[in-house]
Image 1 (cartoon, rainbow, N blue to C red):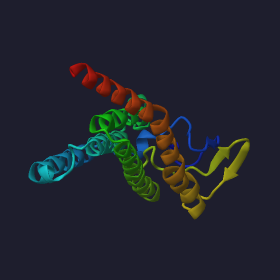
Image 2: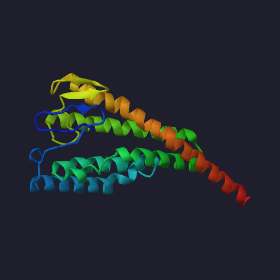
Image 3: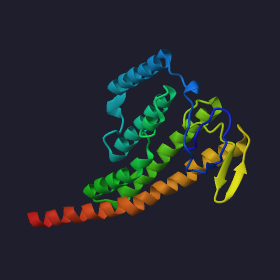
Image 4: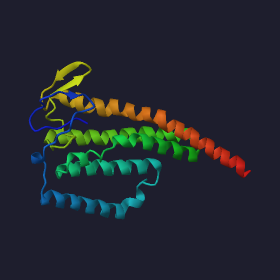
Length: 217
């Protein structure tokens, strides 16, 4: 969300939108060690899924959405740690998922004939993912991972026409740049997308299902 720089920003960041995201290649781990570490984690994950995957609720709409999102988040972190070009890394994000997943929840809830299921999936997805990202961002900031999740070097930001300054590693930095957006702002945006896109998808799909049922009769 917020861009990463090695030591400081020459220009303030637009709060919750970010800037050019210039994470520096010299701060990332473009090494065989990082590559082998990632491959090792992937193999462990595949082994765990093969062993216990049938016990997880992946087949539910919520499970499918969470699975896809977590894969993209972890892939984004890994690519940035390997020093993948910024233009490529930025494509691997989850902001664009908000609308299609809202539509997906709406369509699946219509099949189940339950608007309550739509809101339950949307709310659950929203806060499961945001809490996960919150943890990633706090770790990245504390340990200075050098990815776009790392806010350690963001010491000035703009809110409206006002520029604010915070100390690196301070409570204000964590609160303003991580906690507030991840627990309030982005959940609100996700739920709004559900209202604007997911609910119409639910009503449209439900109407189609009912029309098909009438024709069959």
